[in-house]
Image (cartoon, rainbow, N blue to C red):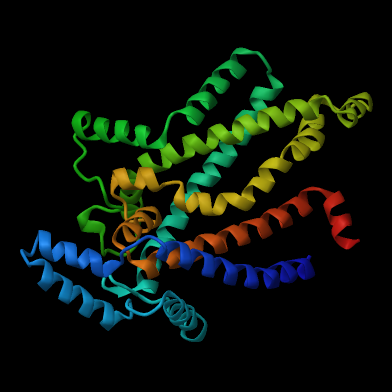
Length: 335
């Protein structure tokens, strides 16, 4: 298993290099850069003439190396990462990119992991209940919940939630993780409760969508597995129905959901974009969208590389989990 892990980790290095080249080229492909954003701001809000704004924008390009060819900009950026751990400087946030990522990535990961764990546990549990009670009222209700979760857009659910909270429940603090009195305070039970009171709508919306997907997949796979020959053999040996389901059917029905973990990590980081924008939360999704809008290339490229890294890590984790779940995969790995 360790050999498999290190081989996959080593093969990820050239993949990351290729992805960095493609990502940087795609980000730079559209016309314009952050200097153009500065020019428009000077003209629209500063009252500068086009010539004055253009001169300041050109000076900004020269000062920050935006006037250099894209190849030179790429090697400056990737060279800083490899040699110094420097991901560049954010033009929009006016601070190093590492600080922007460090501020937003941990809270986004924590929020996404909570949503993912809740969606997985509840979705798999509901899927088992629906499959073992096929066509009953339990199955019908759970299937209706899954249908709503798969079809209602998250941004619409977020808009409805904001409307209800602001106009019907008079909630004033939306758009932050903490109340003002807890912003810089040390961690305590009161601060944790305050955090939960601010993020529960985002958690509820994201969990609802993920729960629906996991439940539908688990229900369909388990229904197929329950009709398999080895399950009938387990029943013929006199095992109880609960033992047949939990020891033989459920582990095999979990395979597609385990493989889904390989792509769920980057989705977890970006899947909350609509909800986070509506609730104005400072997470990864709005930072990616905002940096792309103004041409803050190094922030966008770094976040894209973070998503690529999570995709690779997620696939490695999925392979390991599948090997632990299925002995046949371990035998193939040894061969």
